[in-house]
Length: 553
Image 1: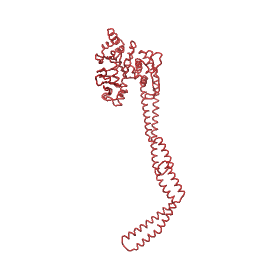
Image 2: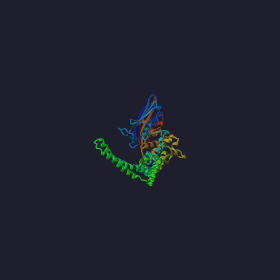
Image 3: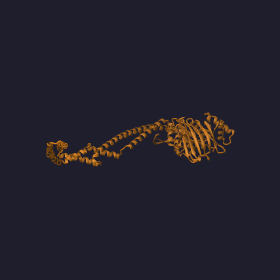
Image 4: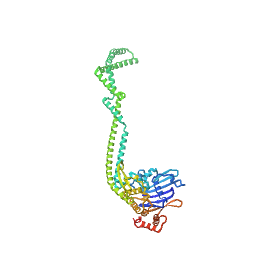
């Protein structure tokens, strides 16, 4: 609820303070008194564009502040909670402030915290909606048109569930896309790894197998040469060399001398003889291992050819094949895990989409069921408020999002014989204001709407139509706070509260809350013009007290 407004240095307004109460509040005053300036000031504190020309001449800045009581379940309260902007002393209070400097600068605050003007607009969007001539933003917005139908169809819970499921689906889609983007393997890289893995699996090269093959190949390829050379060496170590060392040992041992050098020489020769024996044994073992097997040589050559061919195709050295195979196994294992994650995310996304569409189809069905009755109710109210030939049609289209699967367009006509057309094509500002009022009146019967400020919604109406319009506004005010700038005495008389705007000789705008006697004078002025006689006063009392006025309701 809108509870208070403070305006300082706004065009002709030096300083105005006003409080608002629930129900219907009428704001009246003579033409040119500045009633619409108050509406413009409200628009600015709600986030409308601020311009330096709006600063009162001679002042450095203008300041407008407004105070509201929050609906704890409303969009504004949710935004404030999400952005930690709630008033910690009173979480039900919303206080907004706007300053525009004469140099064009602008700032905004919410509960004492500086915010952007766009954030201010978003926060206040569900608190107050200002309706001026040709400024029916809500009525022209497709999202609002759909919300009003939902209000009438009482689908708020179903719509909230569809919105939650849609957000869950989109979050799941984003997670799936993130997993796909974070995959360390491109499609081309994966195909390359699979190709390499297949080659390496076919080769099945063992650890150190290549070095073993090369060594075996050398022995097999040179077997004849090696045997021949080994034979000569063995003849030496098994014949002349062994005999010579044995003979030398015998000769030295026969020398009768205790010289240490001689003893050392004898010991070395004995050690040499032992080493020679060991060498003969190793040479026999080595010689026995040299195989003149041509088939074995061919097999080794074939295996080496396989290794070199795979090495060439993979463009790595033969000794790197085993380590390459290990790296590829790691990469493919990681890819397998990523594929499992992606598959699980895809399944979650598919389930989330299915859940959303199922709930959204339920919502669509409820909307279409309610649309016919909604159309009839709005058309009936339009006739009551002075548009006897007006009626409204609802056209459904497809628009997937948090609100479900529907887009709804309100098609209206205000004249007999004219085909319904989009509301944006309605030419008359007065008609547009009353069409908006009728739609919200019907929607408001079943759910709460934001506080509405109507700037001359009664334009062009008088007499009985003005009386019906006043009653309609009063009925609307039972569900939502209504503040109405009006020129119609019937509307002013039926209001729960009455404020009067006055411009003094110094062109300074003032605002007064009227007492009962003041209301009689003001309504009489609205009836009789500048010359207020007793007849006008008596008629004013009749409007106020005989069943037409707000005091009788």
